[in-house]
Structure formats: structure tokens, C-alpha cells
Length: 229
Image (cartoon, rainbow, N blue to C red; front, side):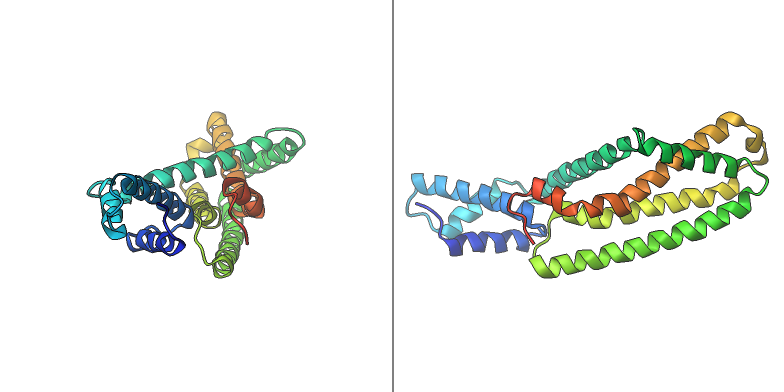
């Protein structure tokens, strides 16, 4: 005995009622529930759909779908970090490494000069303005995409919303340049490491706000064969 289309849609509604917002996880849970229900019907053909559904749901434990939501979130965050890492590695290969070295030298010269505070203010204003602009742009894109598809995909949300957290980390560290003690200005090792850290943070910020969102369609179609705008 197989579930009808209306019963499958009822299972989708059931997952939404239990705080599962993302369509990709809803689909996985609906498949799991449907398979469980059909197995129950093989043993008890007269069991009602409602009773079979509740029995299948009870197998998730007292926290319901919360564990599944957490596990899916971890898996997608890991996938997102792998995209970020793969893109970052490219900036340490030819020809992008030329730009990476140039950016590193810019930070090194800036932080070792007596005008560090002035340069930092300039950097802070320019980069903050760009981050704010890109975050608003990505948020608008994300809202439009949801209106078109009428579905929320976890990886899609990470691609278009995760960048905001990355930019906040970057801007907080940029502000911390003001607190560099005077003795560090003549410490070559500190300047080397500090400039390298800022170079990596800048690249991560650029990748999060620009590179990965520009590849959203490709990444989403690779992850979700059923994904389509």
C-alpha cells in the first residue's frame, strides 16, 4: 500500500508544523516518514494514516525533528566551509597568488608605518561600506529567490546569509588595529603574522560576499538535483 499525493503533502505540512523550515530537510523527513508508514501498513493494513504517522514520528524521540535539524545544519555548514576552503586555496595558486602577495604587502606596509591609525580609518570606512552594500544586496537577492521558488533551502540560506557573519568578524578585527601596542610596530614577526591574518580575512570576506554567491546556481544544482528556479 502506497501513500497518496495528498498524504505526502500532509507529511510536508506536518514537518513544517514541527519547525522544519527548509524544503531539503522536509523532503528527507517526508521520505523517512513515508517509508516507515508503508512498512507499518505491510504488517497492519488496517492501521490509519494518522496512527501510522504518529508512530513513525515517535521514533524520532522526545525532541522530535530537532536532532535531524541539528545534524542537517552541521552537514550543510561543513559543505559551505568546504566551498570556502576550496576557493581560498585558489588564491595561493597562480595566477591569483600575485594578487594575494600584493594585498599582503599592502597590509604589511600600512601596519608598519607611523600612519597606521589613519590608514586603518580609511580601510575601515571603505571595507565597512562595501560589506554593508553587499549584505543588503545579498539579502534582497535571497528574498527574491524565496518569492520565486516559495521554498527555503538550507544551503541557499547559508550562501546568501552566512556572508554577513564573516563580514562582522572582519570588521571587528579591522577595528582592533587601533589597539596595536607601540612595541609591536617594530616587531617584525608580529607584523608578518598580523598582515597575513588580515590578508586571509580579506580574502575570506571577498569569497563569502562575492565569489560563492555568484556560483549559487551551480552549487545548489549540484547539491539538490530537484532544485530549480
